Image (cartoon, rainbow, N blue to C red; front, top):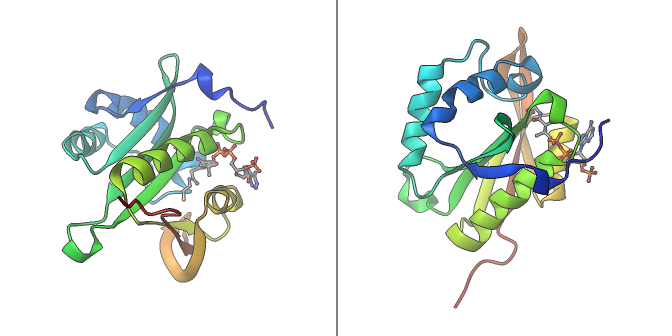
Length: 178
Ligand SMILES: CC(C)(COP(=O)(O)OP(=O)(O)OC[C@H]1O[C@@H](n2cnc3c(N)ncnc32)[C@H](O)[C@@H]1OP(=O)(O)O)[C@@H](O)C(=O)NCCC(=O)NCCS
């Protein structure tokens, strides 16, 4: 495993539509997309329109980490549809480029996302799904207070097999009050 990243050596900012090509590069790597619900051969146009959409959403944060000009990690918090009674909920995801995995970047991204969510937006429940064999991701989420709530069997097609996922969620540890 490589040395831990000095989080100060990277630039963290909101993703913008011009990052579409960099997202295509990140998401073209099976070491990244296999852990997500993304497909091989991602489309720059689809990424651009997704990023254009989230640029309009005050209640979403698509965050990227840059090393020089290279996009080395992406993580996001996004609202889950527009059901009024679930306005307190959001989804969360994170991906780190293969060469940067295991160097503390996942933690650095989660720390920033959760600060934004807990202290500035106030989502009370964050939820995600994670493949049951994705030990690094499960350990990362547990470290930040996510708990396994259940398991969906045969949830998604991955490399020719239907893979199980855990549903994980984290409730706001100290909900805001006056
Ligand atoms: C999952 C992922 C985001 C983790 O990011 P990362 O930068 O590699 O993780 P970090 O180096 O910050 O480590 C965070 C924690 O994960 C755990 N972890 C990291 N690598 C691990 C490994 N190989 N095995 C088990 N746990 C591991 C550790 O608990 C670690 O915390 P600690 O070092 O303080 O104990 C990254 O591996 C990734 O992008 N994978 C591909 C995409 C993906 O699967 N995303 C998750 C979708 S739900």
